[in-house]
Image 1 (cartoon, rainbow, N blue to C red):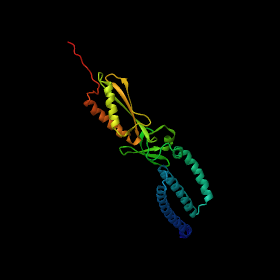
Image 2: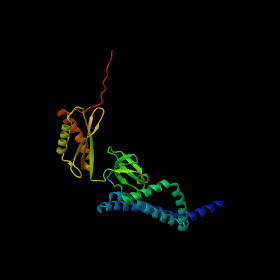
Image 3: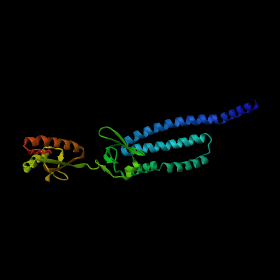
Length: 271
């Protein structure tokens, strides 16, 4: 009975000593997490009002959130009576071990910082990198989120993205649209050029800066005479011109008596 009574007294003492601290720490943690959530929402709205670069918004918001949560947890642990000197020493040793284990993650973090400093792309750009193509939807601490034209989400680690090759289709305001159209051997090449030039001039989206439209015979292929067409346009009009002019050429060549050849095979039967 004495052992039970002693154990009960010890348990009661522990509860009386650490109970209020634990309750206070839990309350502080809950209130702190709520405050951090409110602050992050306020920061997000502030960034939008101040027209902060969209590429920085998500990154800065995440960094600030992680920093505030780390400070909150340190404060909560201190409220429970843990000596901060010992805790910081343990935390430093654990951080070193975790850092070595998560070297790839740290590389992705460094890659995210490099992307935001040198800005090879920004939110809203259409890029092709690491074997994927899409519109940059968000630049996070460790990853960059792309949205494909068919609405798929692609997550690319920032480490490889910052060190690998990449094509940014949105970096320049103007782009050159290249076509190759084939006509049959025996068709009038000059007439084909005239028809193509007429179609180009009829499209107001095609511009003459930095160069005027270019049309020339590029290849005498196996079954066709290929003409290359190069025109310039605003980047936003690239695909509209590409698909539109291709359709117009198909319809107009037929009306003008110009043949678009296709591979054929002649079979000769000998008796």
